[in-house]
Structures are given as C-alpha cells and as structure tokens.
Length: 177
Image (tube, rainbow, N blue to C red):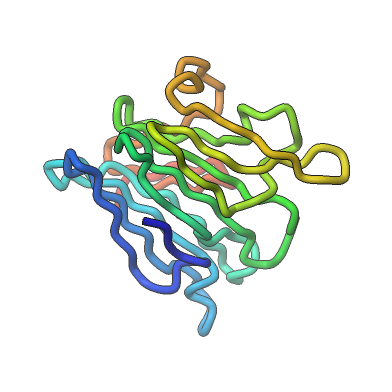
C-alpha cells in the first residue's frame, strides 16, 4: 500500500511476518511537520530496531517520504524521499530495507546514473522495483531486482539494529534516546 506525499500523518506498514515500519512527520518548524519524516523499524516481536531521522532544524534541509510499500514477497520495504526545501528537485532518493539482514540500502548505489529521479516507483512480483534514473538531461526507465542487488554489497549499507537513531545525511548514529 503506497503512502505519503511527504508523511501527512503517522502511517504503519506491516509485513506478513509481523515486521513493522512506522512513518512519522518530523519537521521541527511550526506548520512544516509534514515536510520531513522519521522512519521507524520494528521486529516481529515489536522490538525497536532503528529509526532514520530525516528532519532538519529549519524544516528545509531534510527529507519527507513520498511513497512507501512492502514488496509483494514481503521481504523488502521500499520508500522514496523528496527534499523538504526543494533542493535537487530532480532527485528522489529511494531506499529499501531488507528483512533478512536488517540493512537499508539506497537504489542510487545500483544505477549507472547520478540517482533515482522519480519517487513514484512501481513494485512487481516478487521484489522488482520499476522507477526512473537521471541519464544526461532526461529520466530513463530502470528495472531493479532487489534479490540480486542484495548480493552486491555497497559500502553505504545502514545496519538497522540496537535501537539506533540514524541521521542519514550527516552519517550520525546515536543510541535510542
């Protein structure tokens, strides 16, 4: 089930095994809470695994979730982002969380382009992502098979464990507070 258009309210996504993802508004400036997001990951036993905090102090330098969904095989959670301040409007960072290893990876690392350019991805069975990437001056279709991508481990894998709160843009990782 897709969501968000920059998390307008709290949303919950549950996989068949009970793994759960919460998307929460996180903008810090009055009237801009919806522009930025915090994404929380929970185990099937309801243990808090980690959170990705895309908020910024001025609510203009973070990211908000545009679309989010579990793949049809329920092994991956895919979500796309947009800049809360309109920076790099061509870029829609799109990431995926893997149940098997509690890791979060960016689709940008798997395309031969500057990045994903369309946040309105489509999912096909079992875990295929259809989206677009910037190539030169235009966006071109991209088909990504998450099962095969997982075998290639880019250096920028985020480990979702131990209740860490991760600020992806800064690389900051703090214990749950």
